[in-house]
Length: 137
Image 1 (tube, rainbow, N blue to C red):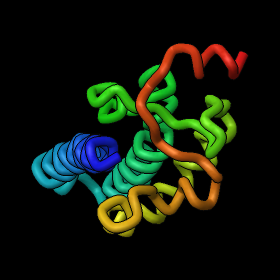
Image 2 (cartoon, one colour):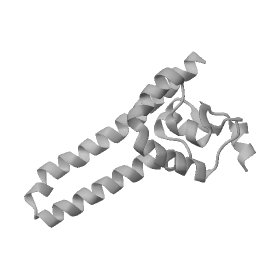
Image 3 (cartoon, one colour):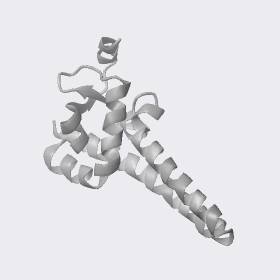
């Protein structure tokens, strides 16, 4: 159980830093190129930036074949509390919740072993098993 909790925290950190450095890259581009352009172009760029950040973070479990990069590295996946694989809609809802709760998620993982979205969507991140994926179909 403790090993699973550590894997969940490490997977969360991988996902966080992938998106953090993605945002950092965008702001670097913004700082060096876009600030030299007109204010309307700057506003459009900022809007595109926030839409990209939102979509990439909230859809991270969908973009990488149903599992985020961190979950894939540590061989984890999202399942219902009963251990059955969840469908696209649940992952989409979970991603949207994570977008707003990610500052709390690390502390929830550290002390409770689950993210805020897990409690809301009645899911849990567990070790990946092929046979659980077959139950979904």
